[in-house]
Structure formats: C-alpha cells, structure tokens
Length: 294
Ligand code: PAF
Image 1 (cartoon, rainbow, N blue to C red):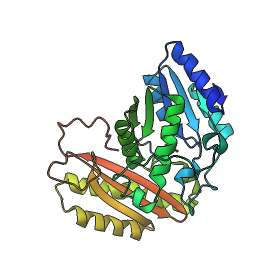
Image 2: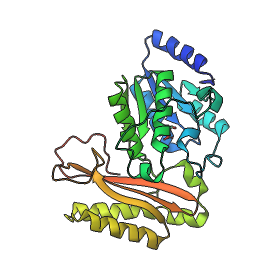
Image 3: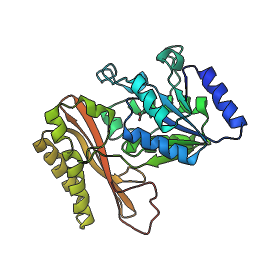
C-alpha cells in the first residue's frame, strides 16, 4: 500500500492504475478506522481492481462548537489496518492540501432540501461541508465506485443526490451498519463514551428496534411513536436531538405511497453525539437492495 499526501501524487498513481485497465474504488473516511470502515473497504475491493481510501478530518463539516479538535486521529494504526486489508492507496492530505486558499474562499457544494432536516437542521452547514469535501475527493480520485455506510443514512442520501444532480459518473454503493455484539452501531465517536455511557449506548438501537416492531405490527400513528421514542430516550439517559420516522427513499414524511420506512435518531450521551437508524420495508415485493433491516 502506498500512502500519498498530495493531490498530484494521488492523480499520478490513480492514472497509472487506470491506464493499466484497472477500475478504481474509493472509500472516503475521517480515520480512526474500525470494522465498519473495513467492511466498506472489503466491498470496494470486491467491486473494483484498485482501492483508494482517504483519511481526512474535514474541518468544513464541523460546527464551531463541535468536536473537530477532539476527533480521534490515529493515522499509524489506521495505516496498519488498511495495509492488512489490502488497500492499494491511502490518501491522507493535510488541511492545506485540501484547502490551499483556506476554508473561507472555498467553493461550496450545497445540496438543497434534503439537508434542511434531521442532522442538517441540528448541524447547520454540516452537509455542505460533507458534499464539498466529497465532491473534491471525487474529482481528485475519479473513482468508478464509491462506498459509504448506511449508518450515516442522511449523508448517504445527500451524496447520492449530489452525484445524480451533478452527473458525476460514479456508482455510489452502500454497506449496512456494522454493530457491536450488543447492537451499538460502530462509530469513531464511541471512543468518547465513558464506561457507564457505553453500557447505556446500545439502548438507542434497541429503542429504534422496538418502534420498528410497533410499525411492523400495524401501528401507524407515526407522530405518537416519535413522541414516545423521544420520551424513552430521555428516560434512558439520552438527550435526543430527534427521532423521526420517514420515507426511506425521500426522507419526507410517510405517505400512502411509501414503500420503505426509516426511523432515524440522533442523541447525546454526555458529550458524545450518537446517530443510528433502522429500516422497514412495507411492500416486501419492492426492490430495496440498498436497505438492510439492521
Ligand atoms: O462519513 C464520514 O466519515 C465523512 O463525513 C466523510 C464522508 C469522509 C466526509 O468527510
């Protein structure tokens, strides 16, 4: 595995692979790699001949009072994991390499509407930061396939819309959320949890599963369910940002045409913000390849 830190070196390396007839897979990350990331890499390896993984903690997607400085940076151990899994290239640029003129004059990619809600409403500017850095990375790597996790469900939808709206010739592939044995969705932010919080954290997934079961059993007063799920989270010790039951295809409220439902939640435990989601297919004959009901 070759580690590259400049856009020029990355372009040269990827062009060489492409000229040799190889297809290019890409897994963008912010590092502190765990099994969830490694599954994205494995999927990219399965689908393409040459895989680039990027590690870049993107300041543009963090709000002023968020955890940019505290975000875990573990490049040495990340490199070992990527090498062991057979990644071809690691792209690990500096902030200056990604934003040579600084953050302020950077052209932004803003995906409308879908970013106004849920995490976009709680973290203004977050998804513009994500869409901007991902589109820059896409232009640098020019992958055939890019792989993202379904844990960041709204992010995945934002990327898919950006790729579609801007006619980017990239196949966006998603991988189901990888969980610890007690159900907690794997996340770099889990490292921030105290041991007491770590014991409580899996309840987020369990509460979502309970409400998915209620819907599967025919309960369709979604506002009532959202209100009770929020109360359950509060009683369990979370400070919820939201629990929301949406159409999994549009992220809009459920309509009679909805074929698949996603229940999304974001909640804080102490200083750690966790997100999770579960999905449910209402019409089992519909093709919901993207959605694993995990
Ligand atoms: O999901 C992440 O780790 C980040 O949002 C991403 C896609 C790497 C962009 O910085």
